[in-house]
Length: 224
Image 1 (tube, helix red, strand yellow):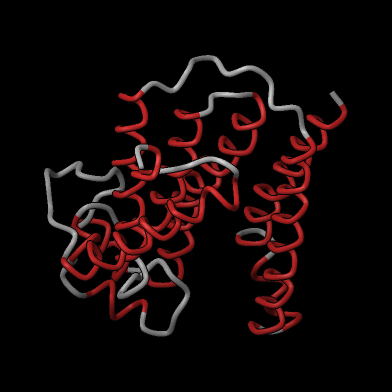
Image 2: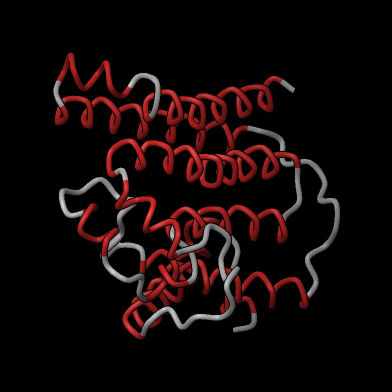
C-alpha cells in the first residue's frame, strides 16, 4: 500500500508541478530569473519528477488486470500507437504550440499535415500512449501512471491554449478557428508523407526496444 501511495504522490508531483510551473509560476519566475534560467529550472524539475515517478512505478504493486488483452485489443493498440507516433513526428515541425520564436508565424499559416487533424498532435500522442497502455494492461499501477499522463496531456493542452492566446492574440484565435482540438473532428485528413515515414520508423524502433526495456513485446513484434 505504501508503494502505491508513493506512486500516487510522484504522479501528482509530476503532473501538478508541470501545471504550476507552466502557468501561475511561469511569469514571476521568468521575471526574476530570466527565460533561460527558468527553462533550466523547469527541465531539472521535470527530469527529477519523471525519475521519481518511474522509480515509484517500478516499486508499486501492479495488481490484477481488469481484463485480459486478447488479440483484438492488441491489434487496436498497435494501430493506435502507430497513429500516436505519426502525430508526434508531425508535431515537431511548424507547431505554434511549441515555445519558439516562429510560433506566431506558424499560427498564421494554413494548417498542414497533422495539424489538419488536431492542433495538439504532440499532446494527443502522449494521451494515446497512456490510453493504449491502460487498454493492454488495465492494472492499478497503470491507472495511476497512465491516467496522470493522459490528464497532463489533455488538460495541459487546454491550459496551453489560454497561455497562447495571451502571448499571440489574434494569430492564435485564427489558428483555433482553422483547426480542431479532437483528432479527426472535421473528418479524415492525411498527415503528410514525412510524418508517416518518420512516425513509422519511430514506431517500429520503439516497439522493438520495448522488449529489452520493458520485458514484453509491443506492436507488430507481439506476433513475430
